[in-house]
Length: 432
Ligand code: AMP
Ligand code: GLY
Image 1 (cartoon, rainbow, N blue to C red):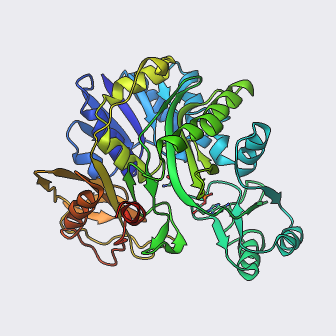
Image 2: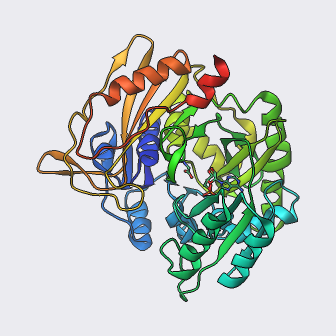
């Protein structure tokens, strides 16, 4: 079988790497891919991004199934385009992808289906938004409505920060996600205290196959300081998701979401990602839904998956996820993201990367360097995007996975490289 992965990040590299291990998969095409997927055994890049070209390629190459990594093509309807052409694809339709692409849609959907989340209001008028934060007080959260790659969020500890966030999203629009008609909206929501975790499930429209739990690190700097990013590192499993919390998440969040989408005529097929805030009493609430795998969560989740990913996708597309289970490596996985100078606001491209071929295997763990913003020029791997590499390791304990990953990071370098030194810190604190 030949399969196609759409996307160019470390998440897509991890998907392609895992699919290539299936005995039933002969070739994994990655569109457009990166320098990592270009060299991954069993994988090949194809320089395509336009939907009609991707559809034509899938027909010509007789692609058995296609998997979509990032939110952009989902929100633009790539799944609808493939299905209309009679092709097998795993991902949500454009309508179902609104769970991620519009915070306003997601918030009203959660209200309709009694899914626990922060109280919120949406504004397009700056004066009304400013007045609202004055009456609510701080801390408070100001978000751009639309796809902002995790960057359009201001968690304001003070009213001054909240006002500045509104100005940046509705005033000078430096942080805005503008619609085609030039308008922008902000969602202003209640601040939730607690610990975050990522809960991701495969969904076939009706049935749910929960994946291993994980935790991302959204802030740029050690100690969860600095600006929000797409994610600077992750580990799996996340001990904050105890069995009791897991049951609550399935019962209070995932099942009502899947049933609600089906009842509203937009059955959800694809990876459903609930970003959770879990309070001290173990009550989970939704920070956001995503309609795809997380990145860097995918790197650690897929690193621990023992099952054949191709077969899981077959079941997901056939609507038979209720007949399978996923098997997980009992070891812990941890990934450290190496980011370009200037990330997240103004990533600098072009730096040459040293040591990326580094692959360290040890007795109690293994590493793999998943590529994100990389390309090859004249035999040299260079930086082409904000998040550049995800150095991923498996270890007998989380601490050992952390040590193995950071040992591998030591071997890699490029001008202006940024990374966090404390990936895994919350779980390590819980355990010691
Ligand atoms: P989002 O893009 O909605 O996932 O938000 C990015 C990050 O901002 C989240 O991962 C949280 O760390 C933080 N955040 C978002 N909404 C809230 C909230 N209502 N309360 C507390 N923190 C939040
Ligand atoms: N790592 C967060 C996300 O993929 O949205």
